Every structure is written in structure tokens, then in C-alpha cells.
Image (cartoon, rainbow, N blue to C red; front, side, top):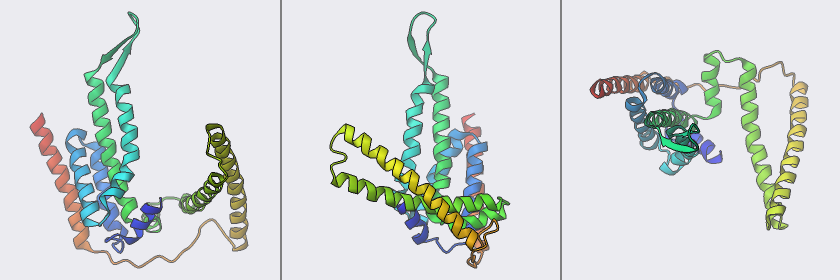
Length: 250
């Protein structure tokens, strides 16, 4: 999380208008969901990854680490779709070509969609993304909840790291039974601290006259129609290339 937040604030496109980054990403995500996955998803995945690394200046290591968790989850699910179990004449495992094709389509489509989201979170801080959410008509209560949860993630991550280091210094993870007990104590302590922090936040907001929405100063971005046109053109070319490839395969 810290690496993601760091690159979101320091990448080359940090000062771009959120619409210039959000509209192309949402457009590519839409293409990934509605067009044939085997022709669209590879184009979207390759284009977004190259744009993120060579355009916004995000290191390959960071981008791949963000995509590693969903990719591992998707790879683990392929055997459950590609292999069928038959109990009619005992126990038998059979390979299903239809299931494997479905698994391949699901994996490549999900990775392409995740790459679009990774591009957004690595190039746009959450405070900038709030502007897009407000313009899309997301209720203010949901936006405030997102901001508070995002802030608390870093607070409790730091406390969890500090607590684990203190437990490790007292040999709390030297054996399996001690590790389980230490993790339980750490989780219980964090839960109590979360309730206490929530009460403090509620009292602080009420003391400041909170009425349901936190108003903050919004930076004045200058929308570049040239960059926006280039992004929209890239989305259009991707859709056309995918349709052309789909006709060639058919």
C-alpha cells in the first residue's frame, strides 16, 4: 500500500487532470468487458502495462507486484474449471477443453481489467479520484467512508507492524503455537484499537460540526484536450483492432 501511494503521488502524470487518466482507463475497462476476451484483453493488457511503465514512469517491479495477487488467484482457479470430476462409474478426472477455454478467457479478461484499475491507483491519488466519483454522482456518504477507510488502512498497518516487531523481539514467533497465539493477540489488540479510533473520529467530527460531508479544497487542474483526445483515440484504436482480429479468427 505504501508503494502504491508513493507512486500515485510521484509519477510523471501526477499533475494531469483526473479525467485525462480516468476516461481512457474506464473506456479500456469497458472494452475488456463487452468485446471478445481473447482478442481484446491481450491488447488492453499490453497497452496499459506499457503506458503505465513508459508513460507514467511506474517501475515494472511495482506494477507486476500489484498484478501478482490477482494473477495467482486466477491461476489457482484454472484447474477447477479445466478438470471435471465424474462419479458415475467410480471416481474419474477428465480434462474439459470447454472448461479450459472458459478458464483462459476468464483469466485474461480479469487480468486486463485489473491492469486498468492498477493504472488508476498507481497514477492517481485517492484524493484526485474523489473528484471523478463526485462527478459520477456517487453519494457523499460513500465517498467519505472510502476516504476514512483509506486513511485508517495506513494507521493500522503501521500499528500492526510495530506490534509484530515487539512480539518477535519477545520470541513470539519462535514456534508454531506461539505464532498462532501471537497472531491472535495482535488481531484482538488491533480490533480494540479500531473501535477506540472510530469513537475518537466520531467525537472529533461531531465537535467540528460534521453534517455528513467533509469539504476540502480541490486543486485546480487544467484539462488538456490534446491529451484527452489521444487517450480516447487509443481506446478507439484498441476497439477497432480487437474487432478486426475477431473477424480474422472467425
